[in-house]
Length: 190
Image (cartoon, rainbow, N blue to C red):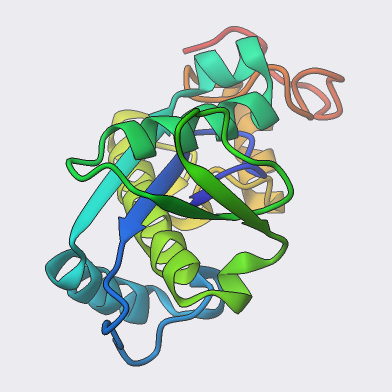
């Protein structure tokens, strides 16, 4: 289990659960943040082909704003597990919190995407899915450059928010919106 998208100010948080056989040895698997986009896409296709099962959980910004990013991340992970066709016996979870789901033993591993092959596969799957979603959002909400910044608060993204105001996928409980750190924002949502 792993999730991506806790740090952005726009877009969903996405989690993946990958059921991987012990014999799986796809070369080059590591934390998705340490891979190029091209390499992640290649590995994603190999993981999807080789995995026994893959589950995805997606929590949209409106829910993130209602329940906070930690709870949204845990919900996305729970959704990913619940979407599996094969019920797992054991979960390796990246982070410091176990998933609120009963009937499955769990081991939480800090920086698990660096330490565990299976967690790294989930990291890659979640990252590719989220990046693809952000590319779609870039088409729906042109002008924010979501295909490049993935919703993270880069200086370019913040400048675009200053010019355009927030759009429906911005997380309004996150800085800069919550504390209004971005000056001269048109606060009318598009």
